[in-house]
View 1 (cartoon, rainbow, N blue to C red):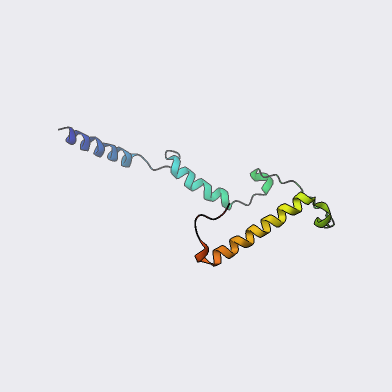
View 2 (view 1 turned 45 degrees about the vertical axis):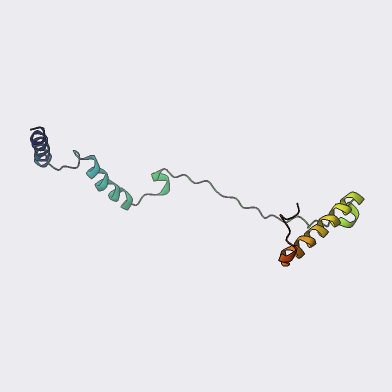
Length: 109
């Protein structure tokens, strides 16, 4: 019984929708779809559409001179020691990676 009432109400809604005139002012979706193409095809300037651009000024720029670093004079003895120690460590790790027979456990930290 409820199903029959639901079907009858749906059919009545469809008949009412078909009976209404299909004017664009009654259907907002149709109004948008008919208005937008006309608005896009109208020859409007950017100012008329609301776009106001600002002038772009480009100024030439120059690159700064490259930095010249002399790391040999800037490192203290402790820094040189740490660099040599890290270099040895990386060389040892490279040798260990190439020779699986030396793999005894996790890699050194």
